[in-house]
Length: 130
Image (tube, rainbow, N blue to C red; front, top):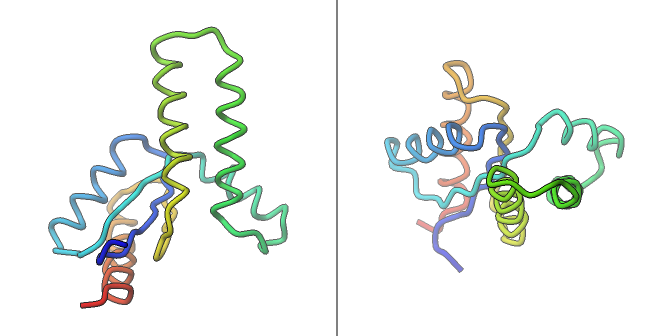
């Protein structure tokens, strides 16, 4: 097991949010491993709301990604579709890990950056052995 906590970010942006989040962790010297999974935050929220808020986020997210993968695999292959299928499979594989914390953000902007940094810092400090 890694000595650094693994933090899951549930994001909507495929590239920008993970890059910004990783950069924030680097700038602030946070000791954590960051995994990001790309999905529609509103679909995740609606599914959790349907389950009266008692569902574990990871299995719900896995089901959303499995459903997306099944839909994508029925379409006519193209380079873009193959990339989306690979990304979805990669995101599903990431969810097999254990996470110290998870953070959901629909966009990383000037209003969410301070909150995101605070979540990262708290998760890295609370969960880290040092």
